[in-house]
Length: 251
Image (cartoon, rainbow, N blue to C red):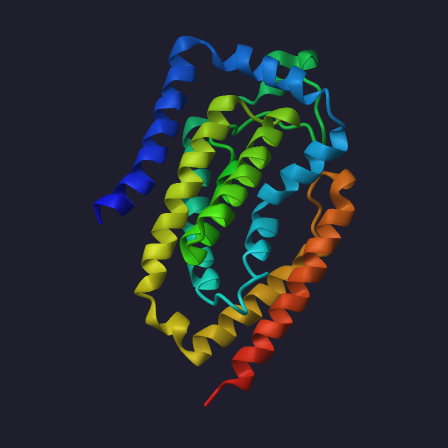
């Protein structure tokens, strides 16, 4: 239990301390400008493709890809997503932090849509860390966990690269996403209905609908269209197979 508390609590506390440090030290804006300068060494399309991995619908759909083999991904993902959405939306509306484009104007090279308000925390980063966290906790494989969090970090950095968020927003999103993943995973362990045949069928059908919805989603990043379609196609196939499996094994 102590090891679990350290694994979850230490990264969250460190990220929140970093948020406070960035805000109180005045380093948030200089770090944003430096990160943007670095990001501009790479094509806009790279950041657009990375950033859609944190879109809420894309993130949820990604959890279905291995659900046939690891059915615990679906209930943990649903609960983690609900927790993350509740906290993220509440904080955005409560704090109303202005985005970089509002503060810095023409100094910000924007990729995608212009965004002006409700910056803190980064919802895309939160969602990316929810996916990485749920996969890490369910699969329990060190190398996979390391790879997943590297991708989540890149997705978080992409929110700075596209001009949508401050560094402190990204750090807060990472903390919130990791905590939400753990909370969803813990709650799912006691959600007995989700392990019943009926529960598995309903969850598989729900994720199939989410995958189909992804085909029509406007992410705001047209450069990432083909990645979006690829994820939607793979998730649709995976969800169909999961749904068939749950019906086939009904007793």
